[in-house]
Image (tube, rainbow, N blue to C red; front, top):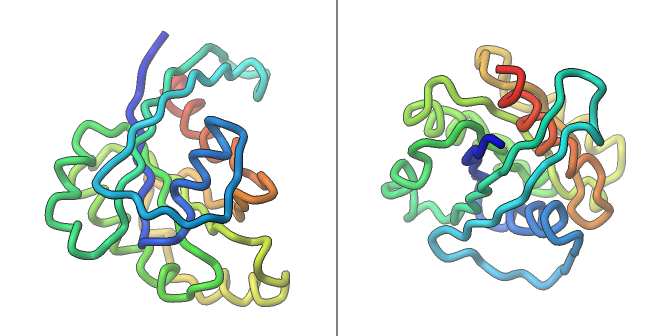
Length: 175
């Protein structure tokens, strides 16, 4: 079984820890706990449950990286060796969406061949019209060839949470 490191990055309070808890532990809590430094979780992903293509299992080492700006200086050392990243924005805070290119560039500066999935998180807190408007004004991300997909996620409801991790896992197996 292959083992791959992935990181979750984004501004503070966007829901990185909640996405990981939903995926790994199948739990959600709306109590906010700020991550200090990094927290590492592990989960084995069996892709036979997800796709009929080339399948197998991947052990994900999921690094939940603190989102505070003062942390940016040491973030590259945590990103080192990551095969993929989930970059998380909070759809209720437009500035977190506007900073997506900053997070993408930081990740790619350390891992130029890494794979990226974007999570527009907390969709349960915004109506569909507002969400579509926000997606329309999102900075153009097409220039980044490493972006596999972007998803509208909710750690609370579970919407597309498994999908973001399964997509990265599939990429690791298929190459």
